[in-house]
Length: 286
Length: 348
Image (tube, rainbow over all chains, first blue to last red; front, top):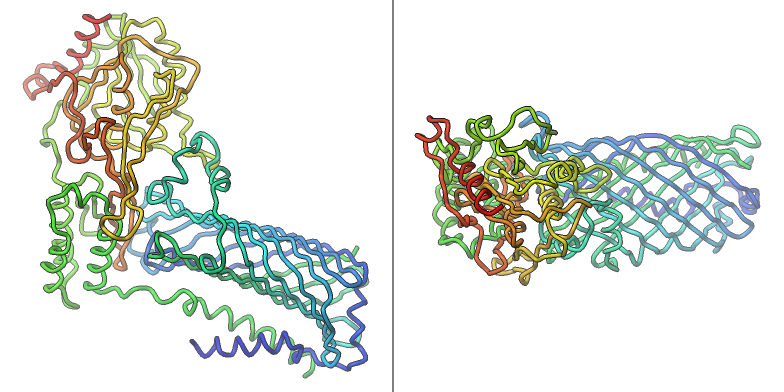
């Protein structure tokens, strides 16, 4: 594992222990500042998407996507409830994209929606942090059109809806609550997923009875499987920094990281996907 | 730790994640002649469906070629090796695409092959009739009969549908031709496309769902990892049906999805196939690529007709075998079309 990844684990530990958020202990109740608050958050930014879909190609495809996010959150006395819609789209290239102009490229479209709910677990008074735990229900589509030749497209997509664990820590970085930091992590434990690779190979039992005159993606979604983390492993983590501008407005910066992999075709091939986003947004406190 | 330090820590955390893509996904395979050959060979070994139909020991391909490949092997030599392999597989759907050239199996028909063409069309057909980008349709000079040319079944749909709606024109055509005593559908130059389009058009000619072909496909990495026999079916489609005699014109160029169309149509009692044996390649191909940027294609299925006769490499034998010779072509005679019209005259 690379040196940077070792550091990464250290950072995660720091953030979730609250050690990075040290202020005086008497401020621990400050998180209640958010009681009964509804907030809307609109964000745009940059996404960095990398994928190695071995069923499609041995090469890694990467590209910059343009994400757009709309989020709503309710910050209750002892709970948190959030809804997030996220879209991103862009092109991906591989190390061989320069061999033939217009070939060895992929269009990528991502869409996800999540509903999270968490209750207050504990405070870490020493670090002025509050920890919440609960569940997240999330649906995701990762759709790709590979052009391995200029005029030939091969479609690949994952559709998955999963429910699993969700944790978040909220930390006030300053006494006046101008700066605060939220770290979130979710880990689906069970997914309903469509993990087909190509419409015309190795998955025909998923396609034979479909009405090809209609939207195939929606029909395929009805033909998914229940899969556990041994088949599909996904982890999603986010760090959000908030800065208060006024009583009703804040700005925020989000770094999001999502990684998943799954086995396919009798475990011969594996698809791995990393989607990272840096988003800037404005929060309206209602 | 002050606020500035915490923000710096946040930024460092972000940068750390951002640099780890390769750690999570792993490195690309090396672009060396050995690795390119190994991926090429292994992809066929795992995915290619038609080894059981070939008199070819795939292991021997590896043991024969691999020892001569090393880091100094030139791209042109590697291309020559791959070309030999592709040609020996003799599969219409096995191809290699490189900056050095495109490799396909040796053509099943000679370079001069007039059987695949409509010749001297105005001698047999009234000119100036309607067409769209996927079909051309005309009255025959004998106005009792209609003629439809389908040069391809290519095209994908919108909104994630696999069906190209341009093929809806078949409803208009059949409406125009509903009084015709016979119909000729010319597939001689149709090398295939999207099988869903082919089945969609064929559905206009049946009142019931009909199984018209069977196939086995690779479902695992071992060479014998095949599905059980699965079936392909046409279903009734469209409001306008046509039940008078139909002649399909075929040639060696009629291939892939066009062969699926022929298989589907020949299950119908009013359809007669006239022309040359079809190309013999259905196979459901997929594309793969190599670290040197070359792309290749391979078949992941093999098909038979409902009676169990393998189509791959054999083609579909017409009910009435006719070829247009070079002499016919030079004299402006379309022997296959003439035979089709003659057949309809006798059976109208």
